Amino acid sequence: MDAHSLASALRVEASALAVAADLAPPDRAVPACPGMTVGDLLVHVGSIHRMVTRWITRGARPADWTCSPGAADPVDWYRIGAASLIAVLDPARAGAPAATWCPWDRTLGFWLRRMAHETAVHRVDAQAAIGLAAPLEPGLAADGIDEVLRLWLGCHLPPAANTSGQAVSLRVPGRTWTVALHSGIVDYCPNADPVAVVSGSSSAVDLWLWGRVGEEHLSVEGDVALVRSLRAAVAGATG
Image 1 (cartoon, rainbow, N blue to C red):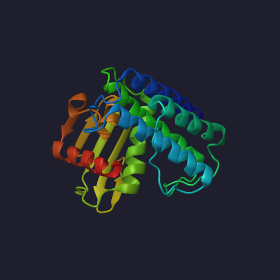
Image 2 (image 1 turned 90 degrees about the vertical axis):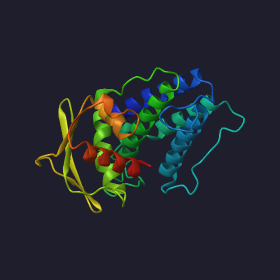
Image 3 (image 1 turned 180 degrees about the horizontal axis):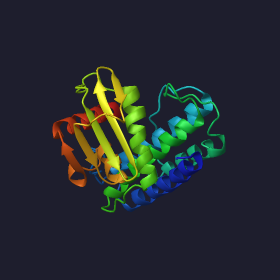
């Protein structure tokens, strides 16, 4: 996705998250995150937004990123942090240098993409807490799949991941990714013959990678155990 589309998605997703959270009691459980409440979700996402704003403006990773709304209304506190982040992430400056944790992308565009996806997945969490979770926009979700496979697995492949070297393909309308996990590395192998294929809408595949929906929302062909190993590797990579 281009920078302006990502910026638009970030604004839409951040607003939708706030609206959903405002409709739920703070102690309402977040279904996909055991032990987390809506209040906890606001603190988590609001802290991430503030951390990234400081990371960009100060040019280095903050030592401490956990914040608290204190006596402030949690939704208002979240909205303020989201607005500050959006103001810093000017899509017209997406190519500008920025401190990041990505070895190959040290630009403001990295954070624009990362925050659009972070906020979108947690918007789904907030809406799920009130029983109204809407799917991700197809283009955003497809870009999210690419981010999970290339950025998260590429940078944070867990040492304990099942590294059989066998290929798995993920297919959504208009796009396919084929990956194989080896010891310490991920092989992006579009011409490989996959041992398993996962297919579905881009929203379903992206949310499955993030652990927000189960296999029942997808079509899984071939080696199911290998598919589950890939999902476990993603869970380890994304924390």
